[in-house]
Image 1 (cartoon, rainbow, N blue to C red):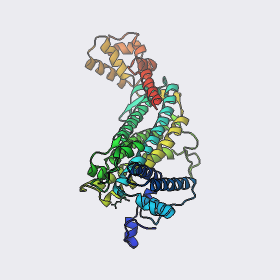
Image 2 (tube, protein in one colour; image 1 turned 180 degrees about the vertical axis):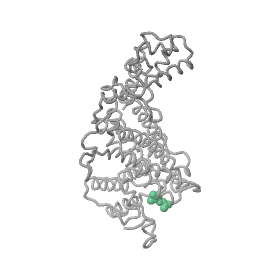
Image 3 (cartoon, rainbow, N blue to C red; image 1 turned 30 degrees about the vertical axis):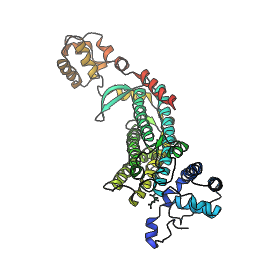
Image 4 (spheres, rainbow, N blue to C red; image 1 turned 90 degrees about the vertical axis):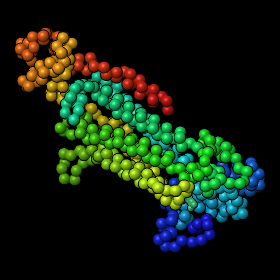
Length: 444
Ligand code: ARG
């Protein structure tokens, strides 16, 4: 089995030309697309009922055999479209040769790829939901657990672990929104654009679009076969998703170190060292961080394939799939690991609280107290800075020590610098955040 166009390419050129190693995974989409096309041709009277039925049965048989694993994809075919059509003709004879009427591989591959990507995005949305659910449950459990918030990785101001985790959820919810948006925009059917200029056969493009669950046909035939911006959009959304997962992964690496000790990662997500018996390495988090670069590379590769290509189809575009599939696979794999890793991590309230108690992260609250009692903030800042320089935790200063810095201080400053109180008084709307996350989880 080789190609559909009668000639031959030899040796390395044949390897260069072949895409079946990559595109064979679209067998289901290719068959469903062909079934919709053949049904439409029959309804339009372009194919006879007998041929239409033979094609439908033949394709259904190939689909069933591939699903069962009783038919192996022949990797000597040029691509998956070639394999399906040649297998069909091998099975049903003459009628199989009529399937490609009013179609080109150009509109066919664009259709298959949109169908495949749409399905993959649906799967990813489910995985994102799973990760957000895991984050949500931990956020509820640790809604009140005080921890230091950081800027420049320096202890800055107190927050709660629940609030921190909600930030992660917000990032992923936006990622889901971007993917859903890309899916919506790509949901138009290229079939009927044929090679680039449509066809003179009386086809019904609305028919095939509806049969395949598309919102409508792609309007412009040149655009239909040359547009791969849906691949770029998907990879851009995946790149951001990976960036977010990578930031979470980095925090898990930091937090699970002895230096922080904020969390213990679950068994099964850490590895030992072949030489240092005490080690529990956060390999999975590191790999999520590491895989992020690959997906950025996929995005750059995809953009570069498209740069400067004249309309409409060019064979360069066959290179779209490796990048897209790699990005989809990598993101799905990382989400599948991240969700249970977060679900199984054991946070340590006391370590977080201890870290929050050192490093003067309530200094702003001390300055705010003075500002609330009439001292201009810039002056109040100076007084609090002076207290910090004394090196004693603000909770432990005597009232005399406070008064020496500013006569405005009274007993109530102790409440202001109490860590729980610092967190409670801040406008951190944890309940609203959790409600927003729950609304997202219910949408699905
Ligand atoms: N394998 C090709 C691809 O992925 C299918 C389209 C081939 N079209 C063509 N005119 N040679 O792009």
